[in-house]
Image (tube, rainbow, N blue to C red; front, side):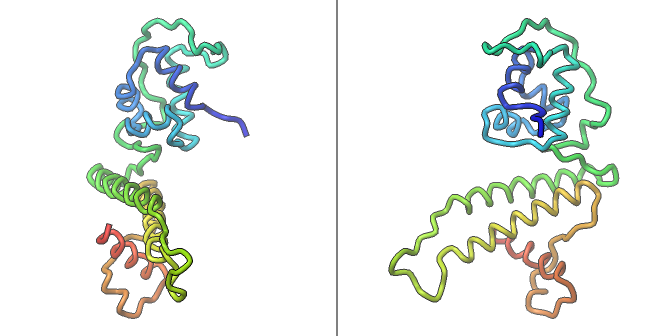
Length: 199
């Protein structure tokens, strides 16, 4: 499998064309924080976002074949081209292209929830499990945290799917947990609501 664009290549290209992370983020509709984390090797974009970045830099005249080990090529200040044809500034964020059917307000709300979930996921993942030699034999340490973590990860996956216009599981009334539910999806939707409320 070929690598579309590495973090080092992306940073070299951006610096060579003398553009800020903010400008690249604005033009391509990529979250600036994630671009910064990507360039420092702490975040991974999906293949589409990497391809969009690469095409954009190549459109500015940057030649990835001419990269030297010192990271530099001489590039003059090129005029900013339009984003690639398959990108809309309003419809792409964090590497996810939102369906044209999704209103901008809905897109913003989903991304806000997605980011809050991501922070909660990171916080939960970094918690120590505890327990040890004398822990309760009948209750595994961290069991509740594991369930919350997995539920938040599943919700973020469903947010990606919803933004693409796919039918997905949405949060629903957590009181359904106490009632009979007809489908596994209803149960998971209730779990989403319960975990999000506790986030």
